[in-house]
Image (tube, rainbow, N blue to C red; front, side):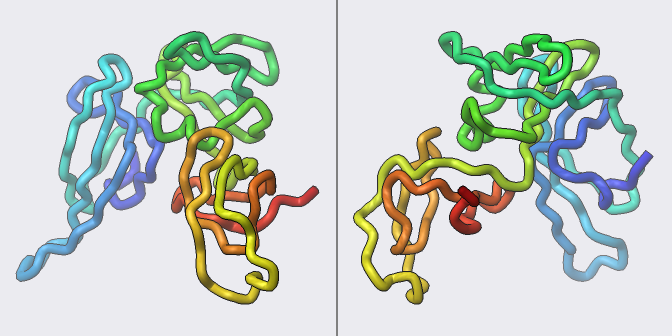
Length: 190
């Protein structure tokens, strides 16, 4: 049983008889309080998909939910359902677009290191690698000699994700993106 201060994004907890996945954590230190930090967590109910906001003290003990992570690849899209295939036993996992709306912006058919989170045999979400490689689908033309400048420009990836890239990046370039901070990390290795 970890403390609230040890819980990370993507962790599944058992709280009030419900399995909730942590989507966002905001830490605050109230002024004039002798106690510790407060952790405001945005949680998603894995059964209903509903949002729940809860606040925990840093010393609160939370119960981890029983879940497994299976390495998968995006197989195909069926309407609003995304079908992922297990890399070991080829089990298909269907996830709705609403359940993975943020994560799917980083995933295409070639993305490696993606895990589906399974609770009681049902897929409930995606766990992304720390970085992914995507192709720039649209950006302003690159400027020769701009590699030394720190200016950036907007770019749209093949998945629909929009991020800022340096001016020397052009349409068609394959780049690495940090999935936590949504930031450009560099050109991908060829």
